[in-house]
Image (cartoon, rainbow, N blue to C red):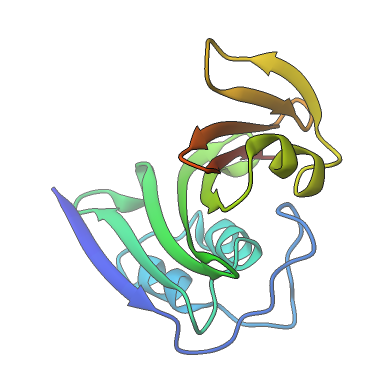
Length: 167
């Protein structure tokens, strides 16, 4: 059974410059503190790093789903609502202890844009290479081996899903 912890940021956390770097000037955010309090120790640094990079701060909220037994040996899912210029983004991350890099992590950042997908691709993801359609409606953009963006038309706008494996 999972223990659900709904968290609201208590302090401002500066995002890391990249998902695989640690901002040593800020302490653990409330997500990390909750993870440690429930026994998640081996992924604490990675949780703090990734959640900060993805925008967890005073205006964001999160739901940490910690396993009730052996939490330091199981997947740790995290869901966040992060405010954006056009509303909120939904960010889902998962942390895996005992990986080759200590703690593996991957995330999906989902956001609605009031623009057509072609404009989102060229403006918001200009550094990503279009690699075609997944099947019919979803355009795939390539950001390298560990990063892809999926663009899905939604009414007059577009939903982007950025998927990244953090090394």
